[in-house]
Length: 379
Image (cartoon, rainbow, N blue to C red):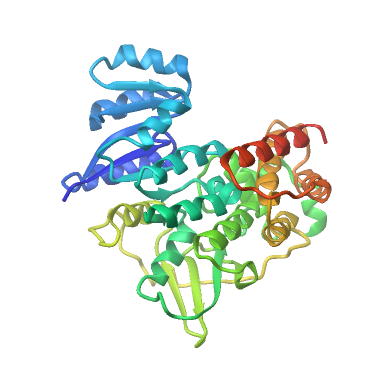
């Protein structure tokens, strides 16, 4: 049976890798819908190769331009257009890879429409995790993580539904500043932060990796995805990035998922679940990859990871507020308006001043998100 998919964020790295897999498994996957922010040149090339039935462009002016270029394909614009792709009739599976808190909107739309979702948007769960998981349960759909760490845990838990878990262990490369002293970190620059030792990612995610905020966001995601108390979720620094995450059971057995660092495997697993198909990556070489190292992260040096734990323990609006404020602070750092080490200090101050409220609706999330962004611009 052919799986019909829509990709929200098709011009980003997750979207492009998803299309590589769709091409690799062309007898089993049909690309029905594509959505992106504004890169219509790439969207046009994708459309001509995969022949989707519907394309959405968040930038409405760009949508009109693409419509002229592709008169035989339905092209829609704005967030309503993106939602139309997420809810499109005949789509079985939606890859949610639109960045930012706005990615929560098509994610909820897809779930509400009864679609299974492959989730590659961190902010959806960080900002609105309780809302998302409640709707997943109501609609009885599958929410399959695409993040390599959460995919690893998802794979380790497959067939272990009734096994008591002692803890989830998220691995982290440690970023470019893993071996820096506290003194060295006080002088760290944005250019240094952008030189990640393992992964090639967008600038925002790369800065988050350097502060370990990316791992903090993943702790929050894991809390919601796996219904796991945050005190049973640990982070370990693993510079080789070969073990993608682990699950420790109460009998002290640990299951780990490992392989060559690549997003291809978790994306393909999400697309083909519960089956596995012939992969695209080379076989793992144990002789070449013979060294595995592990370290405990220093929460004093990497304040952002501690702040993420604080946020999920506090609950309510704080995770959403933290995520929004962090995004603005990272952007200000990238524009060299603030120093790298100010991301953590300013975020700490903002979170300490935030009055926590309950978050029950999408409007609540968007309101808190806007507040966090506004506050982070003026500190």
